[in-house]
Image (cartoon, rainbow, N blue to C red):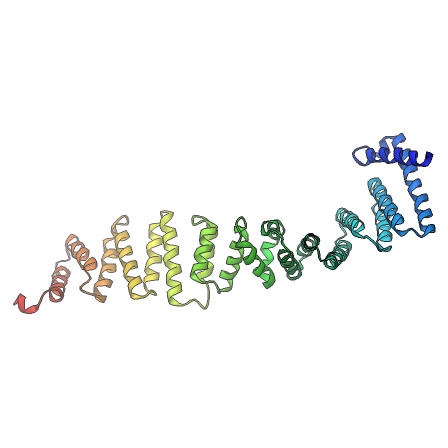
Length: 360
């Protein structure tokens, strides 16, 4: 009874030590701490002699907690590793070791412990245990640069019910290196499709754009996620345009889209130059719209009537009957005093719109 009372009192006092009192600053508490540790050591010897591995394991875990509170991490690790070797219910031991090695910064030892923790979780077939163990090990592996295995473990966690949102904090720190792991890119696409994980989806799309495999819908989605008025969106568009395998139609779309972004920022001259480049590559219908856009912007606000005339002229050359082109071009010639061009254009339009016999 005396030993039991002593143990209870010592434990209470030592708990006070662990939660705020410094051993070196309070001799009385330090003394009680030493007595508590001595008691644990004696009880551990007795349980070992009796072959009671379960009780011995619990005592070793408590001894490790005492040593950790005292700052002796190496001794605490030795107690826990000894407890782990006893087998049985190793869950609490592995939890203590994980926390200890996380504190000490021993990444290699922590990885070993977490792998064993995951093995035990898999053996139990309990989804919650597997999920927690896989996520914890994945976090360590990703931080250490083991991207493929880390991504694979997070995929395993998803398969047993992990919430995609819970993976966002684990994946965010490794986004700059994500392009180096196909497994991680696939995971980013999968998790990023969920509400609240848009930054991951954006990074996955950025990687696809950089590899030249993104289609226009994906680029457009990336622009929306990046924010159409941001520099990130401009950079994504330029990366798309740098693709070696981009066809003329895709390049024309990219140039026109970039032109629209310039226009949104009030950079009219830059927008017009991009629309012109896009028109040179686009299909006939798309090019027509781009030429009309160039002509309208050149007229106002640029006040470059020569540029506007050239845009309309390109359309008239393609189709003299295009009234949206020849009608404003007539006005431009009139304003510029280009009488010969004005007369020539009138003649060409009359030939198209009226039967020559009616004009004779």
